[in-house]
Image (cartoon, rainbow, N blue to C red):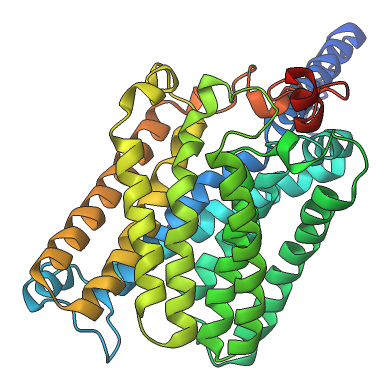
Length: 403
């Protein structure tokens, strides 16, 4: 018997790959270069970002508060039935969507500013010493307080509301101690009120008044009165200083002139705070509201003041909606109290104007996102508002020279 062996198969060819060391090195260099570009881009964003960008959340937060007052009225709401019917046609989901949108935007901006504090602490310190920049350090806390007041998730009488209120109010009081303290305790004229006063200085007043309103909603009227008195006393001093043009600093750059709208924001917020403390829109609240309306009309009648600021889109445009919305909220409470046709028309006009301005700015911001971080932002420039020189003659020396 013969056995035949199967023919042996040829061995499988082995695939041997060789890696070119030069190509691997070039690929690694490309990855490192891309990573470096990303890091530089993030660093550039953090370097040009500042607290003034929280103007956006101030406007959105106040807008959410306005919508809550119009769509979800309380049991004592006595708005004209026709006007209430117009706004109540919007489903409450509109208010909730706006509140969530503002919450997302505020969270993103807060996270970016937190990164700025970590990686660019020196720039934050410069912002803290800047005459305009330091005032907008109140803006993040005011934005969170506004969202807290109109929150659909946290009730005013709960422990969560109280805890969040303390977390948000303490930084405001700390900034008060810094700003108000140096106004009358710092020697020399560099940080005196007459040297550093500008329209954005009213942000400190607004911070105290918004905190007072939130405290009154909890039933803490004594605490609310403390914050209200702290804000209003310094508002009177600041208002007289600005109204009489006693400030020794240079004029605001044209780009920052929209912040003049803060002139009527402070008395508008004050009327809301006092109404929350007293439980009704009484005579004092009406006086503050009328002052806010007068200052609003005074600025609207002078459009040339804002002509240069409107030539090119800038984030300072977001200084417009917040004061108008605050005035609209105060007008809503005024209309509830007086129950007159003229008050209803005024409330409807201001509320519609506020919504229109906010909507237009949202659209403009989306289409001009590449212009949100300009290189020539006045707040980032230490020379945007020059402090009063130490050798500037005082009122006494001027009178002596005249004599």
